Image 1 (spheres, chains in turn cyan, red):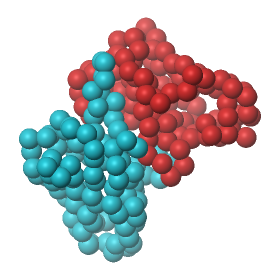
Image 2: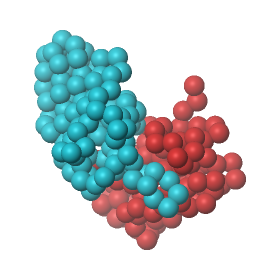
Image 3: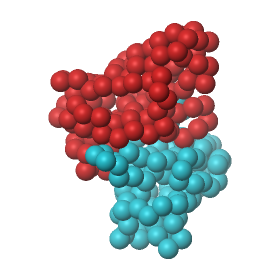
Length: 113
Length: 113
C-alpha cells in the first residue's frame, strides 16, 4: 500500500469492550474513509471524514482525524461478535478523472462472545 | 437496494490461460473501479472507468485489459495468467466520479493453478 500502516494489525477483545484502530497516511488528503471487510467478502463503507473535520460519529463508530500527524483512528464502542472483521482506512486519490482509493494494511478485529 | 454484481464469484484457471471477470454496477452509477486483493493484503487499485471511457490506471499488468460497455457493465480480461494473479478481484461503483464513497461488489476469487 502507498498509504502506510494500520495499527494494530490484529486486535482481539471481549464483547462489550471498545476497539480502537489507528491508521497513518503519507500524502495530503481531502478526506479519509473507513471500510469494513468480512472474511473474503466485499468492502463496506463505514464512515467518511473530511480534512477540515477532526471528529465524526456514526452510531457506535467514532472517527478522529489529525492532519498534522497524518493519522486517523476508528473507535468501535460496545463491540459485538458481529463486529468481527477487517477494517481498512482509505484515502481517495484524485486521478485524471476519478477518485481511486488507496487502502491501509488493515486491522483484523476479533470480538469474542 | 440493488448492489454491485460480480460474476463469476469463483474461478479456477491454469497458468497461461485467460480469464474474464464481469461487473454490473449499481443502476445509474457511471463510474466503475477495479481492485485486486492478494491473500492477507490490502486492495490495490487497478483501473477505473467513467462514462465508458478509461479514467485512471493503477498497478494493472499489461496482460490485463478492461472496458466499460454501453450498459455501464465492465469486464476485466486477464491473459497469460500467472500464479501470482491468484487474488480477490473487486469491482466498485460510484454515482459520479466526484463522489468519494465507493460501493463494492462481493468480489471474484480467482485461483490460478
